[in-house]
Amino acid sequence: MKDRVRVIDATKYFDKVLALRNVNITVRTGEVVLVIGPSGSGKSTLLRCVNRLENLNKGKIWIDEDEVTKPKADIRKIREEVGMVFQSFNLFPHLTAIQNITLAPHIVKKIPEKQAVEKARALLNRVGLIEKADSYPGQLSGGQQQRVAIARALAMDPRVMLFDEPTSALDPEMIKEVLDVMLDLAREGMTMLVVSHEMGFAKAAANKVIFMDNGEVIESADPETLFNNPHEERTKKFLAHIL
Image (cartoon, rainbow, N blue to C red):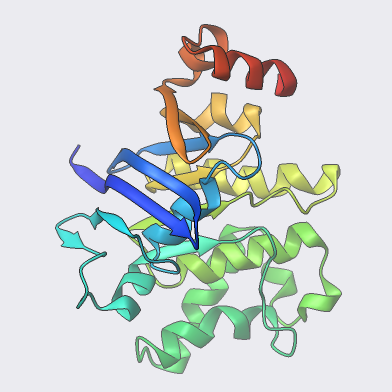
């Protein structure tokens, strides 16, 4: 497997607040990498930098052979190829589920409307929501809205999917339906960088777990090692609160 995402010495400030300090992460093609850590540790900032929603002060980020952090990088192309699913679903409330999914492929990628609709219906079927194609976000549960958001990201045929705490805004009974979709993506070989504290998902799907604190990578290992035999005291203290 080749490296799909490389984060090299990533450093990010918000005014004088240090959000990321010399972060180095590699995600290989087909890998699922889970990022955990306390609030304010830099996890979400890291994802937003990969997708160029934020710019680094120092360091580089590569997707395959493309450096996404170079000044003249095509940001629109980056966002086409890096799908992102947020904590809040960010669906357009005035558009139906299928319209939310077809919008970007039709407008940005110039895919003919009929072809975009066919693909959107296939994606809705894939996430178990084909019967909700003509429903508006306000008519859907939180879990259903998040599954539509995942389908919308997949409609652009991304090389990597970023998930920023995709279940944290959901009621407990809705979490499983979203995690099941993510597990299916992992089994199909989608490269995924996931910020989440869903330990069941980590154990079932993650190839690697990264613990961050104060903008730094403290520890990185396979799930079994990191959860059962962490080396760093800071990791041990954090896991004692969530396991």
